[in-house]
Picture 1 (tube, rainbow, N blue to C red):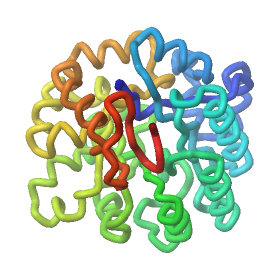
Picture 2 (picture 1 turned 90 degrees about the vertical axis):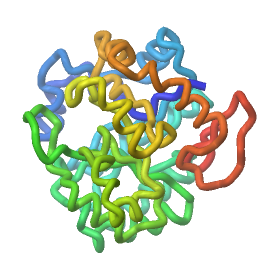
Picture 3 (picture 1 turned 45 degrees about the horizontal axis):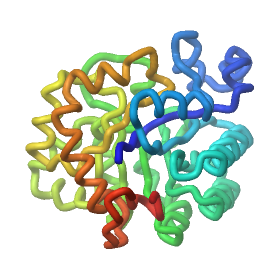
Amino acid sequence: MRIDFHTHLFPPEIRDHRAKFCARDPWFDQLYRDPRAGIASAEDLIAEMDAAGVDASVTFSFGWTDQGLIEETNSYIIDAMRRYPRRIYGLAVLQPLAGTRAVRELDRCAQSGMIGLGELMPHGQGYRLSDIQLLAPLIEVVRHYQLIVLSHCSEPVGHIYPGKGNVSLPDIVAFLTAFPDVRFVAAHWGGGLPFYTLMPEIQRITTRVWYDTAATIYLYRSAIFPIVAGIIGADRILFGSDYGLLSDGKTEKLKVTGFHHYESYLVREWKYGQCPSGRGRAPQANQVTCGRGLE
């Protein structure tokens, strides 16, 4: 079973009125003002999945500063899940600074079948991943529903690009230290975190961490695949295309530049239920368990 763990969806209204929404949110503007930046609908994603031979996708919208916009786009993802069952699995985006409203929204999304919280985008929403007291009420909901958490992560060095952000390794480590029981997916290779798991103290706090490959072609040479697989194991790497932000053949280029060498390991890993489920239930050969029931 082939799964894309990192995709973005938007209601058609946002795609059709890009400039209006760029004017409403500075971080959205930074990422999407360029008309070449893809804004995909649920139908676009399903068509891409069919063309690429992807069976299921984990998807989410965008970390708006406006909680109202977040709730609208979460509702769109929930609707997409209902229209495309067993193909689209949603994560709930939140604005933690919204306080109890954000907690209520996560509860609503979990009750609607979403499997996790994410993508966290602290850099665009005015908080840090190390703001433990701010995030603690949300993590209580995560624990209650056995959700996963997916967060943007930023490289501490290297070139600047739209969307890089400043989700630093110290912030990630602070989060993992505060919430060691949470199943955590570190996007974009965790900002280089796998390399630091060679340090015993970092290895200890990352036993429940997985890493997605979103935006690989912007960040690393293809050698990243064998090197990281050698450090943490191929079963901790989750394929993520970053569709629809990355489109126009970039997903296929990612596969060509290295992912195909490890795809067989990753498919086997999903098959035997070792993804971030924590449920200890091995699915059938044509199923997959992830979060609170991606199957």
